[in-house]
Length: 237
Image 1 (cartoon, one colour):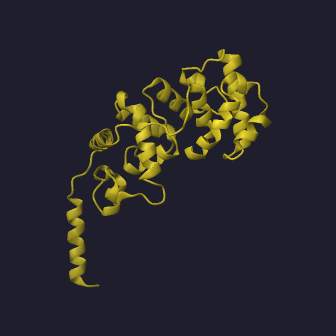
Image 2: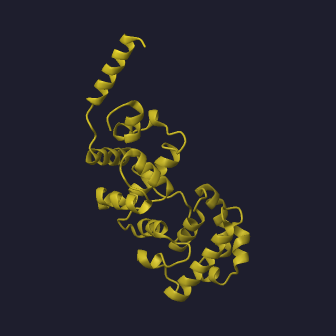
């Protein structure tokens, strides 16, 4: 091995190790400030007109793209514009309108069950409480958080696949092994007035910039605070 090259390598590594460690508090501050300045408007890409339609769209979006969901819902909402009309439908009728999405059989069952419970248990009104929302078929904690944050601006953070992956990659949720742990850390660190929007910031960032297979680090505005970028470039994270 070339002694000069080895010595140069050691000097480079030593120099990189001297770079300032990014504290997690600084990481959160830098990431949130960048998003607030550069992505002031961040909202769901699902198309809906009322809380019932949003619940339907979010249920359909599980392991399915928003683009596909938005292709499905116009005909679905025309046929079943509210919970009462969907509750009166058969599972087969609903299935016929959502067949092109992922897992259509289970989603058709969930949609009908969800609509029936809204009508017969909640009097036709969409429950505002997260725990009550999770009683609805097809509605888990993530979906309930989406509904309460989007519709009622509650200070909660919905952690889906994109948010869980991106938050972990950036270094916002070190040690989080599941979405609930990630949600708890994000909720602790992110101010209440930014939590609802932070979900969309992270989700859209994961969808268009910090993609799973090939993150666009060179054009990423939050790279200076990103643990993954620092690791890839040899900086101390």
